[in-house]
Image (cartoon, helix red, strand yellow):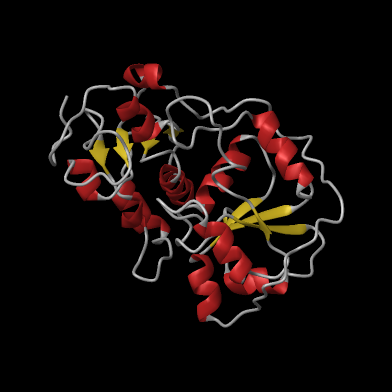
Length: 273
């Protein structure tokens, strides 16, 4: 299971083998996630900051993957362990939480899930909420995590990748009509636009398996997904998992790295070449 329903999470709040990671984040407002957490969160949740805990500061990518050993060390400091069900939550219907899901899943954690529907679904059901910061009683142990990423692809390897290159951003960013943060507007030549939101219903929940398979399609090869900075592309990867399709590779540097390096840009609704 890669998702957890709000009611199941509520029932397990007192489970000592469950740990909640609140990863709320907002584009262009790096402090907003922490402020939102301080204002209220699920009881027992620990805040993980995308800007400091879940990325590397090396290179041109805004949210480059950290070294696995650094991720492991930080999460152990916050009390996460191998024997826990780790649940990632956000207020973006899973779009940010999927980044932590992808990281831990790729490194081999046995049970990592995303709260289905996000904190909006939790709050709609009037489930427990607190503004008390969770104390970390003791450091955890994530010794089972692997020491390298297995499904991440580097920028210079994109031309050798099999399958499709899928851009998970909103259509207007893909077409190059707007670009709120990166150096250039447009998309990687040859990429197809598949916004991550296309895998969700109007309540922010994933479509059922058959509907996901219809939206995602597959030619049997390992597709590659990217987005603005390697975050919402992980949500698309989660959709592939739920659809029972082959796991895509993640171009983690994504558009922030590609445009930052001054690589060729395509604009408009067509993939380009």
